[in-house]
Length: 175
Image 1 (cartoon, rainbow, N blue to C red):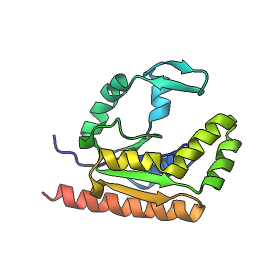
Image 2: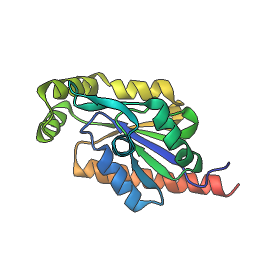
Image 3: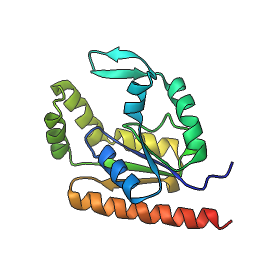
């Protein structure tokens, strides 16, 4: 099946602006936003809640099975804190959002995250864990890293992604 619209994965450490970017991009493009974390909760695609980390233990097989029809059709933005579980064939563009670690700390504090969770996520951001996962899982030309520290970054990033989507559509519908 040939897709008429791309699949974009927006990933990054919690607090980098994934959902904000994905929501705005969905408003500015023909793509639909799928908040994967919400889908996991709403459709019980998990094996239970981990009290220590205050998060769900995702059943990756169930999640992939649930997302497969959407990804096959295209026209979606997958918004999640990791990306390496998604098959390479799904991804037309993988956007890794990066954030200054001091700003990230403040964002996570405002969300009420525990100190342990803030530290873990901040260390992951400093070490570039999600960036490394993405680069190991997808072709280099598919992966882009964008700064997400300010409203200006947000606007610039959305503009770049809209331009990319329009080019993808032009390149893939004229064949």
